Image 1: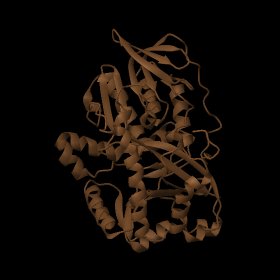
Image 2: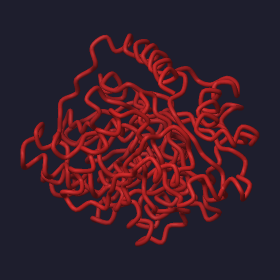
Image 3: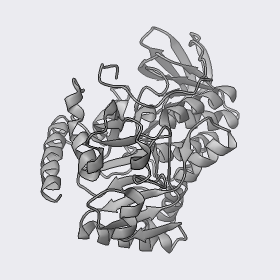
Image 4: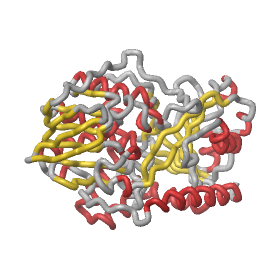
Length: 426
């Protein structure tokens, strides 16, 4: 993550937590591997349920995608209610729909109830349509969510032009349940309140081995330290390695690149996202954007599969920015950074329990802020009660993607092809 060309605009709050070193040989109820949003949310709620909790983070809190994403807090999943009901049945499907509808609430209620020092705006998220097919999909999505009482509505061409200030959209869909946050502040504040609730957090403690003996898990770190726990939760998502055999081969990790302009001049700021919504467009290789608390335009999208080596690796985002906002062609790009996200073949999060007392969650699909915040509370409830109904997603076996090593090559080729098709539709 540490390259000369990764410089985010997000900043930790000044009152950031200080974390403890890992005591060797300690025994806890719950060990969590990974200190991102999923791990910290699980830790906080588990501690509030009376469990002793240790979080082990390989790097520093907020160093991964939890602190380096675009900060969009979007409810829902990639699928709409009718699809979920059809594929999961009425009981599980209904539970999934209700859970999906609640994920943004989980974030903003946590910020409010815990008094987190997190800049945020909750004026909604716009899914912008640049083709008739995308507009038709928005109409179908709007019908399904409005039938459930969601605060959503369709936007015509004039409305989306006024709300975004961008060029090229035929219309779109506004979900007022959504919003934007500073993701690094949020992750840091989650760590702070978890620590206050009794959670121990140790940074720079990469876990290299898990072993179960007589119902007790031994967790060994790269530094030679050992921890014992009744239960282990793996919350490493796109940074998953070989700790659980086959798990890394169930996901396709992708890099999410971000750029931020200099603070916009007042005359431009008044016409670009004047109400502070977040936007995702309908292109095959989508871009997403919002304004930051200090008045910059922040735009993100998929980047190259290899680690970036120069500012030119963000050029595709700069081109997208000017395509949407020609008036920004002379505004400097001051910040560039990236994180890693995990996609699953079915575009749904996966919950695995390969052994008793060992749980793993992967696959945020780019909606991790709300999804992992809400799921962390459910995971904690499941660990405390043993009731699988606490989990919105069914526990599934680990199924590695066939020819996984070649899947990455195929994804890179597909991204290049989709970019070409998107360019032809402009």
